[in-house]
Length: 164
Image (cartoon, rainbow, N blue to C red):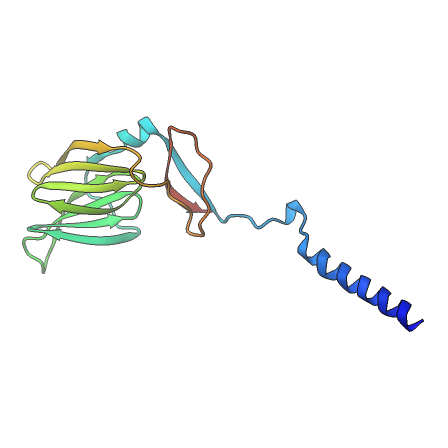
């Protein structure tokens, strides 16, 4: 009797343990973020010089000579005249969707635009840009803040992840 009770107890305990490891498909955790995806043409055409924009979610700051660039995460860069550091003057905004960082050498600006590396020149007097070169698919697709990777086709680029 003790042996039967022990076997039944072990079987019940093992059933409970293994049942907790099995989760129904509907019970899968949901990603709280959804990707913003553009086709390659819209992605490349999204680069433009615009008037001042409000800063909503700032990222890195870069200062070169009399210019200051403040990243608007995944949206572009705010451009300031930094001649007087006590009172920087807003000049404009470089919209470049998917961008999070830049580097400047001489008068050439290098920007990571999601999967591409874009080389451009900025004209302070006219607040205009000229794209010099685009190296395509240099970087991997953006993943969500929790590490999820979106399913995309060859000509689709993830430029941001928005919380649902």
